[in-house]
Image 1 (cartoon, rainbow over the protein chains, first blue to last red):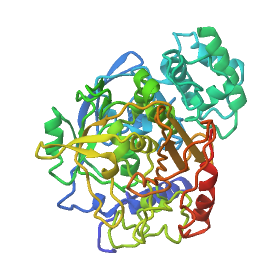
Image 2 (cartoon, rainbow over the protein chains, first blue to last red):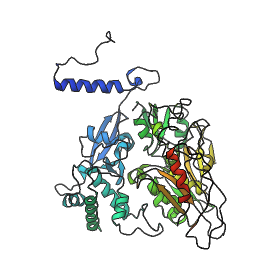
Image 3 (cartoon, helix red, strand yellow):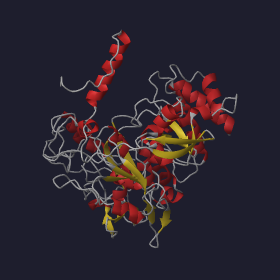
Image 4 (cartoon, chains in turn yellow, purple):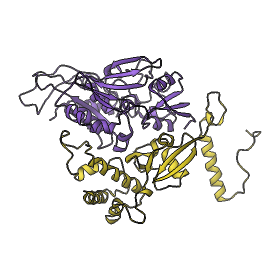
Length: 216
Length: 307
């Protein structure tokens, strides 16, 4: 170990550098062996080019195929409105609209959406005018820390589009009938993919009800 | 995530033949595969994206059934008017699962092929016979609330997590697949998944699922310890033909691993009203392994009463 060249750059020792190098050491030590060694079955990380239409702007990106859509938005396009809450599709903070449908951007690869149209929280407003859902969230105080909020709003916009298309939910009483107007229970069920640790749920539901009323 | 090469399949045959290489994985919705790849439970060296293949239609068959393309999204399948009218149990089972965001991405075939949610399968630092045959089963003496009480073995007590598969089992669905040589095959869904004790198969890419009967008045009841997103402890899908007095109760997926269900036949004819059906099924003969599985065994008779 002492004979191997140091993998850490030579830095002056300050509080910040200790923390930074410590973090690096932790990250490097937790990488699976294969990523550091040159195994015969290892694929060399390579880059690929894709095109994403995000909020009506066309972007050409060159990235590692492993890049999730969430990371492409946040790290490559500086659209940090979508949040990484769990990175495993369980919290909904990463919810964006792809071709108008809400999905968890953490559980999809950017490469899979080459050529597709994506709307993030940054793309909901019309210039300086808030989207009705955004305005409703502000009016009804539908957030506290705000971390889940981008995902909540995008998900709610997607949810209203789904209900207007007549898509049922687990609570739909009679599947053979058209979907009736959504009550509180239905809103909660359809929004169950977005969780909020601050428990702003009552106000979130109120905001969605208002936005729902405005759009019908 | 381990590095991989990414390409898009040009045709169904192209995708099927790509799987000749064991390091290649097909990706459709990706909501399970990417979840596992982030944890290095799955480590493909190449991904073949099939999302642009023409497999996303629901068609009526000549014998009155439905042919569901492998790439039909779970939300679209649940919302299809024909499914809602004629196969309500399938719609209900789909709507019971995951979240709207996940249902918008997950596909029919992917739903059948998804892996278990056993905590120890997910933890690469723990022994797991499914990931590493022969290494042992950590769930046997661990937290096994969501694990199998029927059809399991000492080697593995994992369950198949799909609610949709249970409904398909109740509907006697058939799965059409294409293997890597391009040969098409139809498998009854009861035989599509395997019980533990056999090698963990990698099935060929599914081209479509096919429902062979038209059934009415279908119901699904899902009992879970948590609301909304949660793993159902017991899922029962029942059907009865409206014209006959006898009926068959399919007691589906009371925690059967990789296999979807074990049918238990035999129940008393329904009373005059169809609003209450009570039956006794031999669940209590199962030896619960721990206090977690005992809770499920105790719950089973309760769930057999439903409206």
